[in-house]
Structures are given as C-alpha cells and as structure tokens.
Length: 323
Image (tube, rainbow, N blue to C red; front, side):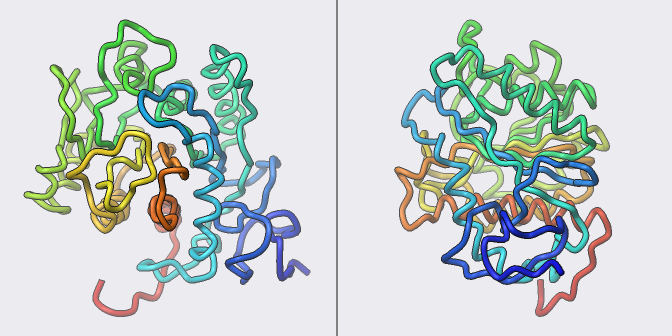
C-alpha cells in the first residue's frame, strides 16, 4: 500500500500520483516528488545546480533550488490550475536532488554539470533543472545538444547573455554567445523574450523586448515563438529576472520594466505546440527575496511547465470557469 501521511519525498514508493501532506511540514522535494536516482521509466527528472560562481552582481543563487522546493509545497496540495488535473497521474517525475559540485575547483564546474545531465538524459528522461546562476544553462545545453543536435533556445530573460567577454569560462552574461560559437545553440531558431538591456548585436537571435510584449500581448508573443522555433528541438531557459522586480525581487541582477507573473505563466502555458526537450529555471536568490514571492513565482513557472508536458502526454482535466 503506497500511502504515507508525511515525508513523501523519502517514504513514498510509487513515482506517480499525489497524496496530501501538510504544506508547512515534511521533507522538502519539488512538489513532494519522490527522491530517487532510479530513473527507469521516469519521464522528467528534477534536479538542482547550486552554483553562483559566475555572477556579475549579487550572489546567493546557490540557495535557489532549496527555496524553489520549499515554495512548491502549496502547489502540491491542490489540483493544478487552470489545467484541472494532477500532472503526476500522467507523468512519472522524480526529484533527483542536487548536482554535487566542488566549489573550491571552479574550473571543474562546467564539465561536472554536463556529466550530471548526460547521465540523466541517457536514461531517456527529460530534465527540469533549478539553478544556480544562469551560467549553468550552457553545460546543460551541451548535454542536450549531444543527444538532439543544436537546440532552439527559448530564453526568458531581462538580459541577452550574449555579451562578448573575450571567452571567459565562467560568466552568466556571455554563455549563450559561447553556445552559438560552439554550435550547441542554433540562433536562427532561437528567441529571447523579455529583454530590457542593451547589446550592440543580436548575434542572430530574434529578440522580443519586454516593452514589445507589453504592447503586443501574449498571443502575438506566442505566435512569434512558434514561428521562430517551429518543430525544432526546443530548450527552455527561464531566468527569473525576466519578471519585473515587483514580482521577483529575489534575484541577482533585477531590471525594472519586466514581465508580470501572470504574463510569464500565460506564456509558459502557451508553449504546448513546441517540441520541448528540457527546461531550466535560474537566478532565484533567496537572500534578496520578500515573503518568498520570487521563489513562489519560480515554483509556479516550473509547475506549469510540468503541466504543459503532462497535457502533451495526454492528460485531460475538468476546467471550471472561463479560462
């Protein structure tokens, strides 16, 4: 019998399904998923990359995975809104825990992250990864590109992260230019959403700035994403500073004028047509957060992406009200 009334992260035996647990108690995993490194039959593996050695402003994102897990407990207690289903009736999802890093040997970090991702992807599972600073996306993308070829990057961000820094091996503001130069990102299929900082070149990416999104709306933004990416293997990279600091103050490099939480969630929910091969969510820095609103926004974005993946896998729900 697979029923436990607390600490499901450790005591639950089955991967699928959800049981009620007190939101304010119990061992923390993302959405109360079972902690496991047995990936046989697992559809999506959640893991954390607690690294913030590539930041250019405020540190603290090494604590992001822990904060996102903690903020997810309320979401785990209810049927998913607005989907009207439990995604874990359809998807087998586990929390793998965090990637083990050597903080005293920073040059080892990129290969460690790539090897971590290779092992998970080799099982056939997709990845949902929590940073950490945004640099961690590059070694993750390297592993995904080994399996799928150069990826279409769908980047939600305040910053382009394609500044030319002369080739620094650890910089969360230049890694996507490096990814293009390495051939693991296909810029002709890639799009950046929410940008509101300047760069002298788009480096071949399509850019939808946050003012453009505000003026043109969610449907036009989704149309632009679909037109750009098509059916190419798409990797989603969501920097929480895509959101305006009013909705996500707990981040290292906040920029006013960003997306509201509702806009971000509507955009994530609209990505269903894409051929999505993985996602990361990065740059949550709890030390600068207020009332956990940044961590809650991050948990909701990740939760809704899982629901989108469940819908793609055939999950059906009962919708209440006008959605």
